[in-house]
Length: 125
Image (cartoon, rainbow, N blue to C red; front, top):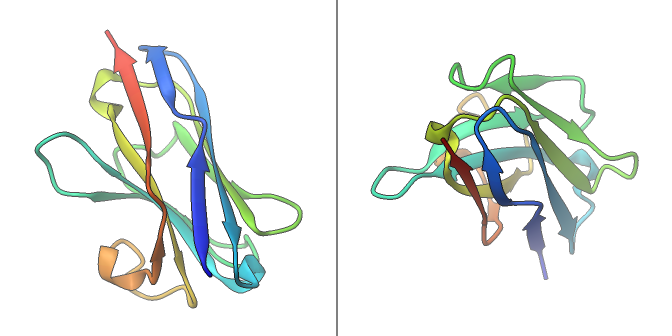
């Protein structure tokens, strides 16, 4: 059974940092593209960052470029999102997602086959 489990969310002050983790199991995720999305209250779920199976390609939403970094663990079945210089507008539930391929529409929810349950990130001003 495929499972993606996020952790690392919490409450942080503006300007602070958090590192989210996503542990994948049930498949050989080392070849899967992985991504982070987020959904703020009352808003649509939006793309944050994606990484290829090899880790050689990454893409970011413009709103997080230069502040967030996506990476894979050495075993490739864990993905991280290092978030620095956090802003109140980053407050959201962050979701991990996995796709068999790094699809051209990597920024779209439709590109991903599996999803985690989400972890709450709250940034206070």
